Length: 567
Image 1 (tube, one colour):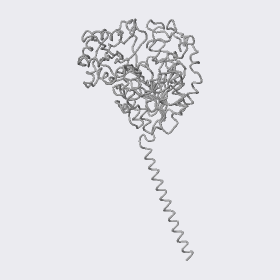
Image 2 (image 1 turned 90 degrees about the vertical axis):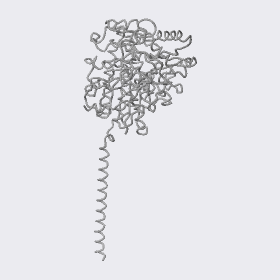
Image 3 (image 1 turned 45 degrees about the vertical axis):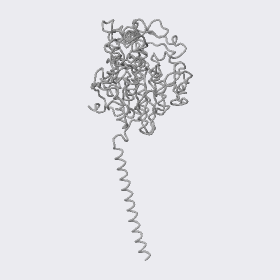
Image 4 (image 1 turned 60 degrees about the horizontal axis):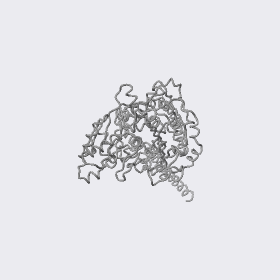
């Protein structure tokens, strides 16, 4: 019994063990298949480690090509030739300013919805001007100045950076960086890990208590290295021999401003002698781009961006081209030199990203917050139509006209961003129809030289526009923040202040020189190519959302562009 039973028991045990092993193998096989199937789901295991948004302040579309022959091979040329270039990319609203531009890029929206209708605007409820990122409830972190009293509280919608953080329970890191506060804060959104901007009095990169009560250690270390002192100890001379700057006008033109303290706007610019008591000057010279790039690389390493399990986002804006353009104009040697040097900064940035994270792990886009107009004096020197409309004259004349029409009173509360804000309380108190007053003002301002159109707020709101100028005006109009009459200037004209012919350039119009900006994608899943199909800046955020398999911002009006990249 014993031997036979034991042998039978052993046989049964062996069969049982074999069954269990087979079951385990089957289970493991099923699990392996399930994992394989899960990994094959598009997007689940295929997202970039890092998204880097690069906004170049005041970069007109033609600057991609104007200096092409003098760019190096690893910066702008590399992005354009190895990336996908949307050649017909525009802002779909007016006015085209820095605050609205950065907001549109990252919200996928327009001022009518996101509320950023200008760098500043008039607040009827308080009777004062509101700066787009001002916030008196927070404090400066990193300096004793008031430059840190800022936050994104005036932005009415989410950003793509907010949606990224929301998509994974705040696991992604988001950092915004720019010399300008609005260039860092609006892109970073409401939920950012940090936004940092430059403080001229101290030369530090700062933030506000909206984000943190103290600077991270890596920011403190960067500030402690006193980069502005080093960068501003050098004379600004041209990168190339000055006679090679054939894409620009001569070095000393009457429509160029001087840097503060200079007698003439010519090279070399003696920066050490012009520095003064603070570091404001760094914004207007190539060193401003250098310190921005250096700080971005410090953030990349200090925050370990692109090194975690979730997609991170670096929102980077180069502000210096805007300062330089406002001073010298887009045809100046100074602006060309800034772009040639920026090209080298971008090359270094791209090289570091590819070396430390990998080209296939980083998604980069390059765009601008607006373009720039030619200086009217320059155009007139070439017998081209151009001019300057004086804002003070328009405001005072409208006030006098309404005094004669309806009797003396403070009829105009403010004229800003080419918008007339009427005194609605007075109009109501005098029992005058507000639409009637708007129409009279609109008809009156048409008599001013350089005015192409004047449109009432009522006309913008009651008609659904499907394209052209009126559609851009509608997209830029916010019922709670915009004025009663919007003035549109002729192409080649811009608004000036004070007496005399203005120097340097500006922006803000519906014209293509202000709305047409670059849009180049590079890196992760981007195949080289180009398209002339018209796209909008508001398409950037939904394109990123589609790639990351997350929701687009809640005010988005754009469309994903991936299908256009396949053609």
